[in-house]
Amino acid sequence: MNCRAGCGACCIAPSISSPIPGMAGPGKAPAPKPAGVRCAQLDDALRCRLFGDPRRPAVCASLRASVEMCGETREQALQHLSRLEQSTAPQS
Image (cartoon, rainbow, N blue to C red):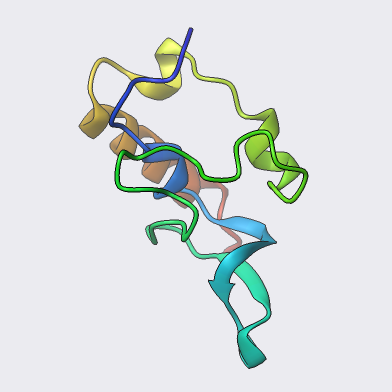
């Protein structure tokens, strides 16, 4: 399955623990991406600017679109990924 054009759900809903260029942390160093926050590398067409770039986090490069994850709409994808994020987040 190919990614749905104009979606970007996987670049918004999940947290990414690897530092991402453009996600400014202390001192403007690359920082991880919190869940529900739009990745700094997501362009206006909802495509990854780091696609194919070695700076792209390995977790992003390993993610593959699937019917289960993406659903039939962008909204379904955001909901599914948000539920998955919540169910796998460390409990405090």
